[in-house]
Amino acid sequence: MQSPTEQITKPRILTVDALRGFALFGIFFAHMIFWYAGGPLPQDYYQMYHDIGSGIAIGVYMLFFSAKFFSIFSFLFGLSFYIQMESLAKTYQHVAVRFAWRLTILGVIGILHHCFWRADILSIYVPLGFILLFCRHLSDKALLILGLACVFNLPTKIEELVSILGFNHYPLLDSEYAQDSTAMLFAFTQANFVEMIQHNINATDSKIIYQVNSGRIWITFGFFLLGMLVGRWRWFEQIETHKGTFIKICKKSAWWLVGVLGLFIVIAAGVFITKIDTEKNFMLQVLGGFLFDVSSALITAIYITGFTLFMLKPKWLTRLSVLAPIGKMALTTYLTQSIIGVFLFFNIGFGLFGLTSPAQNTLVAVAIFGLQIIFCRWWLTHFQYGPIEWFWRSATDLKWRPIKK
Image 1: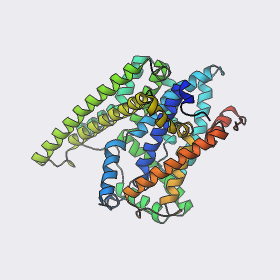
Image 2 (image 1 turned 30 degrees about the horizontal axis):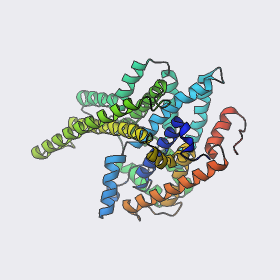
Image 3 (image 1 turned 45 degrees about the vertical axis):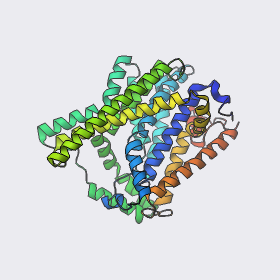
Image 4 (image 1 turned 90 degrees about the vertical axis):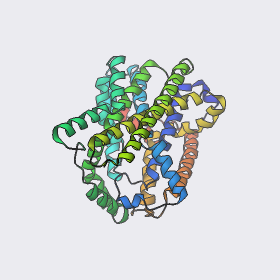
């Protein structure tokens, strides 16, 4: 495999792959810190550890990781969608049909993965990917407006306001947190393999309710649209040319983030002084949720543009390029992380749930991800694709593609 410096001639591929690897680390860390749960736990378990290390780990997770890295991954899905559609158009006449078949195969992988781990994201991506096929011909302006509206979770907030003002009901869909967390705890501590699969299948309703209530499904689709739009604008094909645009977006996002955080602090101070019961004040919850969604979107923009700008610096290019192999094997890496997480913490494996602190889980996550980087780098010296990527490509073409270099 080429060294990072030798791959400079392919800046778009290298940057996108490295950025995807960065996103995979963030997603992995966000799941590892609370034992790869993928679902709600009784509140006591989130407060089990009070050591300084765990406090720092949870604080870092809440501020810099929660609801941020899935957005980067979603943005890259939209970007890759555009790149792949262009590539398919050079070979196939019916591009949409070909990509729909590709999505269908990914959907089968996602369903199987969901049966193994309930927080699978592929089963969410695939139906949204089909909708993306119908949006690919929208104008730039339409994609931008619709994408930003979804990224800031405006559809959910409008739905919440209608629900509160019209029906005095919040959130949108009723969820059985206590029942679901008890079932999650059973899956962790007592379930055998078959029972764990049954739990994950039964948790499909809870998964959908979470996606709707949190607006995560809208945010995901919004980043799909923005990624596709950036692909159309070819920013990542000509990164040096668009350097000024990346800097402008990064700076403006940072200033807007400061403003949002300042507003949040003012509101929090007002709530503290007036002793408002936030659990009964639905409008305040909607406002707080909106500020969180906006801040998460802004941080995501800072991550994407900042990372891309660092990749233009020779020293940082060499450092960050170590993430490119793992990004090139993103699907294999993502599925492998789930296997590792489940067997580490669930009853069917080592059963470490609750026995390790968030601080220890952080160290384990870094160590495992480091090993994955080494493995992916080794694998790509001998093979053209990751094993799951190879299967996906072969199934798409309905013939076995060569894998060895």
